[in-house]
Figure 1: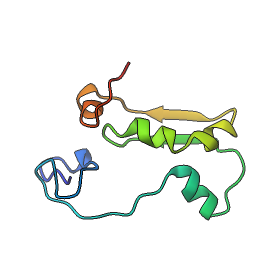
Figure 2: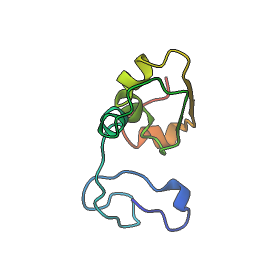
Figure 3: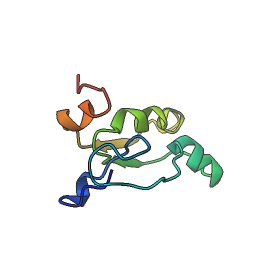
Figure 4: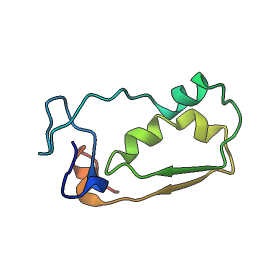
Amino acid sequence: AFAAGNPGETHVAAAGGGGGGGGERTPMATLDAALAARGVEGAVDALKVDVEGFELPVLRGAAATIARSPRIAVQTELVARHAGRYGHALA
C-alpha cells in the first residue's frame, strides 16, 4: 500500500489495498529467482533489505544466494510494528 504521507513506508499489501493509500499490482520474485534469471551465479558481497516489515519473506527468498555467499554482509532495518503487519515478530 502506498503511504502518501510517508512514501518511505510503502509496503506490500493484499490485493485491494489494505493500508489506506491505494495501490497497484506489482510483479514480485524472490531474489534467488531474479538473480538466476539474470545469470548471476556467484557469491554476493552485500545485501541491503529495507522493505518495511517484509524482511523475513525477502530473506527466505534469498536463502540460496546467502548460502553461496559465505562473506555476505546483510543490512536490514527492523521495526516491530512493520514486522507485525505481516504476522512476524522481531524475535
